[in-house]
Amino acid sequence: MRLQIKNITKKYPNGVLALNRFSLNIGSGMFGLLGPNGAGKSTLLRTIATLQDPDEGTITFDDTDVLACKDEIKKSLGYLPQDFGVYPKISAKELLNHFAVLKGIHNRNERKDMVDFLLKQVNLYEKRKKSVHTFSGGMKQRFGIALALLGDPKLIIVDEPTAGLDPAERNRFNNLLSEISEQKVVILSTHIVDDVKDLCNDMAIINQGELLVNGRPTDLIKELNGRIWEKRISKQELPAYHDNYQVINAHLNEGKPLIHILQDEHPESGFEQVAPNLEDVYFSAIR
Ligand code: ADP
Image (cartoon, rainbow, N blue to C red; front, side, top):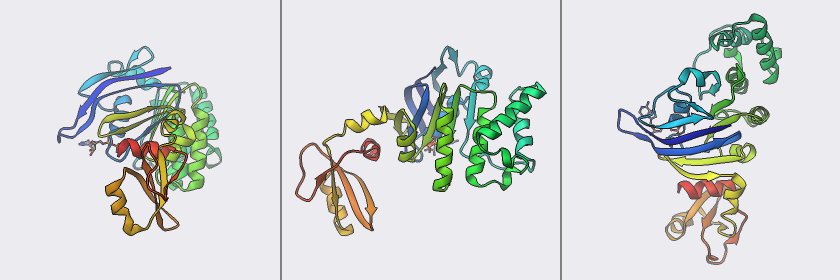
């Protein structure tokens, strides 16, 4: 299975160039799409999901021309958007059944089996009689996955699924994603670097509508070997370090900035060489 995105350009009517001749190949498994807010991730995902048209470019999924054969691609596509908006006040089971009808699953028995199977898979079978609007954030996202899995799609798109989830819910959700990704192309869009590190065998970093980095997380991390230096400094010193070094990451640790800089040779004393991580890859790419 292969999704091929070629030279996609999208300019919104307000003049924002959200995607600029963007190309990317995605194979089966979990693919992480990382980028800051406004990078163009949702624009790309909505385009792949055929919810909006690009100005230029082509997308193919195996042999199907995605942009020309929208009805066909919709059958093999599951899309979990950032936000579903308002849920009607009917039970989870009824709602899933309703969407199964819309998805074209007309055989009653087949539909019932699928709805029960999916509710069990996302661990919501016990809650099937409750209305989705009473669910916690994590339960809603798991319900969203059940929706996205209707009709056994081969291409699944999830847009920022763990934003707003507590750590336990996030863990449960990520485990579920990892389970469903076999024999499918799953694209996970996020700005949470750890989610990509934990789940994805391939990834891309995008910013300002352009592809910055693409590869396996472990390979991308390896490329920074021997070039990341760490130092704990005071808050007052931070501006001077920004002036003098390529500071790629400065996060607080026990209330004090812990900075990472990128350079080949050993900086002044006080810096210690550390093993690079995916955050270093991310911040050095979007810097
Ligand atoms: P991300 O999902 O990475 O946060 P988006 O694809 O949502 O990025 O947005 C990319 C850029 O396009 C941003 O500058 C955003 O403000 C702009 N944008 C997104 N949707 C629209 C729209 N419907 N109309 C105008 N500008 C938009």
